[in-house]
Length: 109
Figure 1 (tube, rainbow, N blue to C red):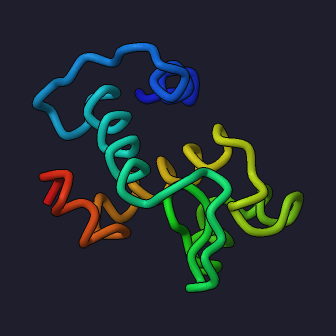
Figure 2 (tube, rainbow, N blue to C red):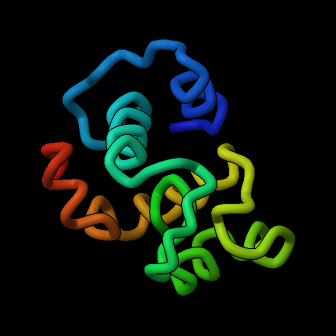
Figure 3 (cartoon, one colour):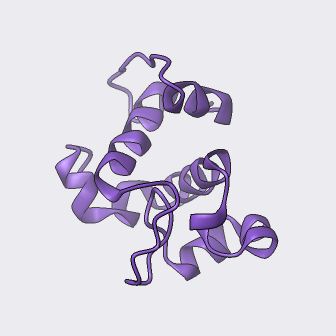
C-alpha cells in the first residue's frame, strides 16, 4: 500500500520506480506527482476555486482531507504531505477521474 513517506521521498527528489499495476505504490506516486507537475505550485491559489499543488476544490478538500481543511483552511496552506494524502484518499475512491484533463496529459486515463 502506498504510504505518504513514498510520496514525500519522490517530492524530495528521491526516485520511485514505475510499475504497470494500477494499484502499485509507485504507479500512484508517479501519477500524483505528474498531476502536480501540470497543476502548479503547492501553494497555488489562482482564484479559480482550485487550491494547492493538486488543484483541489473545496468539496474535494472537505471530503478527502477534512481534518487538514479544518486545521489549515484551503490546500494552498497545507503541507505537501497533507495535499498528497488527500490526493491519495481521492484517488482510492475516484481513481484519476478527479483530475480528468490532467490525468489524460499524464496518460493515466
